[in-house]
Image (cartoon, rainbow, N blue to C red; front, side):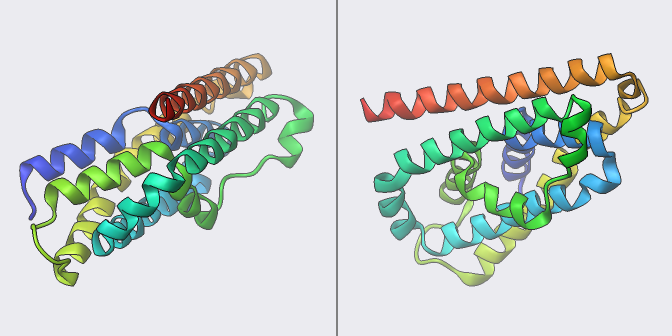
Length: 201
């Protein structure tokens, strides 16, 4: 199962911009790499659990997902817009007082309403699990491989945010950085919502 195609697919899907990585960059910039670790681990382990459950129950998940996908899409996009607002507010002194890094559990739970995570997980399971009935060992191996590839890829974003921290001590720079991250997150939410609406039409 451990082949170049799987490694490449999971690495590319993990490292490219998306809701998780934009949030990690913002968290790294605002709170530093170390305080962002629970967020990163929540994403990677949440992703592995999602891969495992989808791999074990693919037919059921696909049937349910087709009926609840619009709802998940709207909830996910609404949550992204809320996160955008939180990132935007963290650029101001009053926002900074209430801001804190995303927890492990919140990051893990977010994978279930993250449209990009669903695309990645379903494609991974369909493309890389052996055909036939779900095999516990194969599904566990795939989930573990995905987590091990995902974590260093997403860590790059938190590290980049952290690397900018000394520049972000200047309030003007922090406001610009958080405003940029918040705007990119909001645009991502609207883009994903547009994609969901196109599917419905």
